[in-house]
Image (tube, rainbow, N blue to C red; front, side, top):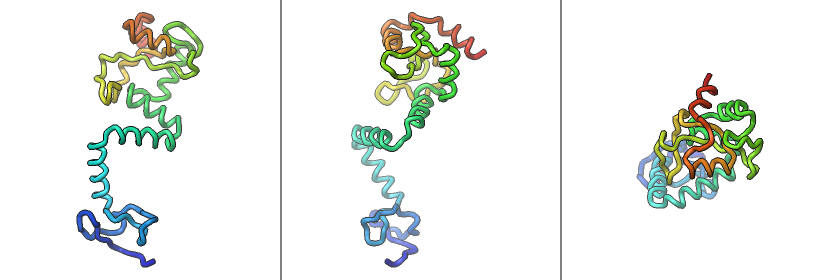
Length: 168
């Protein structure tokens, strides 16, 4: 196999350095036929035309490739604007109990849910709050309290007093 210094992109027709092409083991020269820029633009267009498939593929890739703690960190940061350490501090502050009913574990076996003010940060992407500011977090609730809280409008706790104490 001959080592190339440059290659012509089959999409845009430009001659570019081989570093501008993704690897492709199945091709004779070991490189993709489109340059990275053309491939990226093509993928962007495909995602715009196929949003559901793109989301499904992304979820599947994350489930297969992203470590659970990294996924959790990403989820807390994007949805609520807090870190794993802040979640754990709130958990310790609450004594490892639900802020609503005082249960020491969630009946579903999952971690406690982050209760947050839905009016604080606008929802996007199908109703999921993205880019939370961190100021809308009120506490941690078990699944039943989180559901009751969402349906009844936060009946359990004086949230502003709780958050003022946590901040102090």
